[in-house]
Image 1 (tube, rainbow, N blue to C red):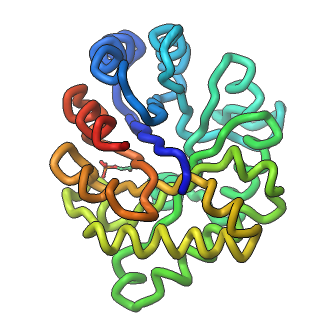
Image 2 (image 1 turned 135 degrees about the vertical axis):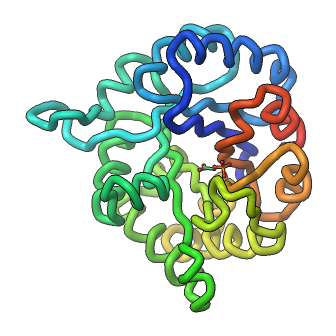
Length: 250
Ligand code: PGA
């Protein structure tokens, strides 16, 4: 299966000075990590994060980007701007973007296109709302989100796509999907990738679980056959908890 990747999603937390401090605390704790480690920080913290992670294997992610290269798009940040400053990753399609800021499957797909064209690696978030799970349409929802976002993405480009399965009802709620629920949907996503590409390409993709993953439940989730990592919100702001999750990703 894909390479293990543990990514922190800091959301709208930490000033640049606080970002430097948090990364300094995380750095020694993850120095021996056998998985890839990424911190996803607010735009204004990117330079501080790049400086603080210099000389380490910790990658830096932005939490969104726009698809046009420049122009009259007040408040947006171009994928190229991120790439030029040395950012390697971008989180796209997070449910908070979809729910609060109007991101749709169609605009997420455009953002994915822009990010891949700029040379970034994408962490693409997909996941169902509670009502959709209760209706029994989780598979359809997640498959549709995945297919639309990857429309036009070549097999070669797929090597720069990480998929994060994040059931919306589990994000920031303290309610984690069971390891079986997480694995079932991650496996389903891999089947979608097999249909779109082929089995070899699908197996190589890192599929993360996200949603209240923490130091106590990470090992069980990460032991599942199709869970190749985690996208961590709340626990990524706590150095020891984040490091415990990183250590569990073997
Ligand atoms: P959480 O957030 O770990 O705080 O639930 C996960 C995410 O939104 O990526």
